[in-house]
Image (tube, rainbow, N blue to C red):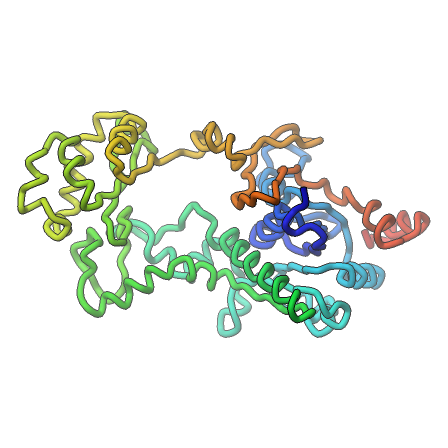
Length: 409
């Protein structure tokens, strides 16, 4: 069976997380992704190692299903080889600092002169303006994209989210732009430039907070448990801030992840009141309607927690689901990595690696009925040099050792 992006060649000049997360998705969708690394390799090969002298999990979990070549693009021969790679590719992706690729001699004008059909995607920290040259990292993007100021509890500091919305979130945005550009090329015959900024991607994921910022002009946000409102959206703990109030309630035996997140819909209040042993609240005018409960959200979830704190979270989950009440246990990373259903859905996958042995990685979250995915291990540094340089670019067997000796590969 063919793959969705079969026949698409991606020149992957990315490193660390935001870029590799994007190109890994393209590889899972069937593209031939050629990762171009400096002879020293992507820096994450050696970062956060759990085993000495082997590629780190940081690298392996972001570079599945790719081929790797090494190339020193600062050398003249390296630039010639890169030119040929650009000529043969459909997509080029990079996440270097602003202007780095231009300084190599490969401006957008030069790239489209080499290959007018290429889609050239750049991931940067920020758009054009006063922040352009700021160094961008995951939590910097969260801080400047609206996430940190709205994450945490009212009386605490801004908090980063564990989800990598700055890096991998931007990578997913880049994938959408690349696929749209490839589709448009089927009509125009031309490639185009795709630019995605980490700050912009985070802000897109925080759009509901801008919704609430504008709602503040008309009074306090009743869906929030906060008592005081100023002129900006406050941190509101685990409140959803949406139309249906929710909160993470503690369960037995009281460990750090012994919680269930519960959402109280109007139709769910009667069964909840029965479960918690307070059936009279279903008809009490002080509690019976969403409008009556809104000013007492803290007290409402306190009553629910008095019940949940006596039971394990899986028992709470079973009881709530029996009444179709939206809820979910807080799963620890250990529980996730051991979850049978996630393994069955091939979203938690075990992969064999020739140097580190087996490791667990995240599988493809995009399930296409006609484009099945088998998660393959990440490539070793320069593993495909001979395959690509000799077999595809036509470099002679005699030149290959010279290129290595001269530091070109």
